[in-house]
Image (cartoon, rainbow, N blue to C red; front, side):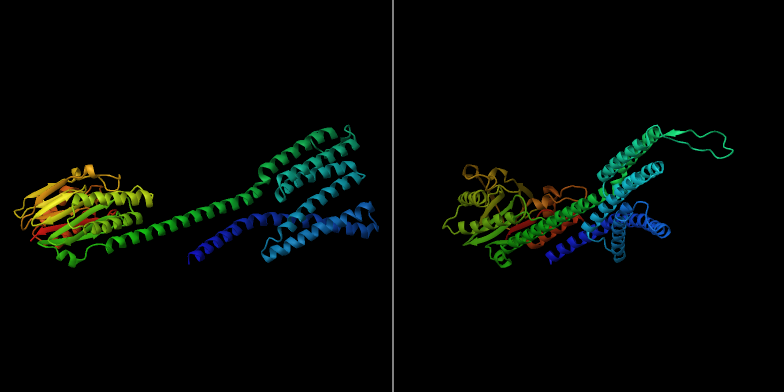
Amino acid sequence: MKEQSTMRGANLLSDAEAMLVAPAKNVKIRLLIIFNFIISLPVLVFNALTLVKFGNFANPARDWYLYPALHLIMLSSGIYNLRQQIKGTSGNPTIVRLSTWATVLILQLVSIVTVQANSNLPLSFLWDVSISLVLIYLTAVMLNRWAALVYATVAFLNMLFLASRLGFGFEYVLQAPAGFPFQLPTKGVLQFVILWGLLMSISVLVAFSEGGVIGKILKAIPQVVNKIRDAGDAQRKLEMENMRMGAELQVAQKLQMMVLPRAKELKACTGLDIGALMQPASEVGGDYYDVLTKDARTYIGIGDVTDHGLASGVVMLMVQSAFRILLEDPEPSLGTALERLNSLLYKNIQGRLQDTRNMTLSLLRHENGRIDICGQHEKVVLVRQDGTLEVHDTANLGIYVGLMEDISYTINSLSLTLNRGDQILLFTDGATEAENASKEQFSEKRLATAFKKYAHQSPQEIVESLKAEILAWQGDVPLLDDITLVVVRRT
């Protein structure tokens, strides 16, 4: 399906290029057709009438060979290109180009031979220089500017040769009509050479500035189409990259949800009632939480991997697996478990993944109303049964896991007493850093206040109520980080 879409895009660009190039090419071809017929047909009629009237030509060597070649080339070119235009095509580019060059060259050859062989040299002189002004520009349009320059050079040399044959002192006497108020001046050939030389130069300058416009358009259109094609390729690459990233995010989200503790595991915790949820965001942040029971102890882990995407989900999966394995020790120590977990993560992330990700991680253990905490993560919010609110910081209990190979010297612990009815809230920064339309964060203070407000509900109801309040705070602003909430109440 993706390949078909790419092919359709390429075909559309090719069609667009053809639609843009064709009109410009047609201008040249139609001009060539008009030029072929407007020159060859009158000359053909004139030659035929001359032959019928006089029975022969004034210059048989020229008129029996050069003129037929002129008619053959120009009429063949005109008929071929006219047929292609009727069919709606531009014809073979090589044939069109050759016929154009042949038309210009044969016409120039005929012009030179005609004026040089004509006994009326003054008339030939005027005819040659006059038609050259038109042909210079037409040559530029139909071929290119350099062809026009060559044509102008040859025409000017021909004019000089004619002038030398006439003599530069030869004068045209321009007779004024009867009753004209003043006598028209007499002009010499030298003055005409200078005048027509200037006009030819002007015609060449016009050809260079304007005659190449169509050629420039024809050259520019493929470049523009190529740029459009490049932009389309870049857009497709971006779409594919977005699809790849979207697939990664989906995989990461599935990894997160697959390893989360089930409801029956939460209910199996001795002396505790636990409610938990994770609200995945559009950009996966690698949130992690786990609840494991061993004998009369309950172990809880909560953390957040830096950055987003599949790699963060893989790191989170490593933590979940390692945490479960480390608790298989007969007497697992939180500090030792955190130290070993960090060493494993550092080697895998830095060595295998060639990455710099790390994570905040706090490990908790509950036994008979005593909560032990080690490792740096977000603050722990505690609401006593009598409504007293406590906030305990974990910043001094360690550093980010996976940041360095040995963190043993940074690990500290904190112990809290959890009486019956007391409950603690664990969360990730997606809850506190959720922003509304005014770029204002939900904040730890609002979260703690809301936790206290809903403390009379069951732990699972509390996390649902907290999530609803956070999302209501955000409004229409998209969720950019996962929200993880865990409430633990001693029963």
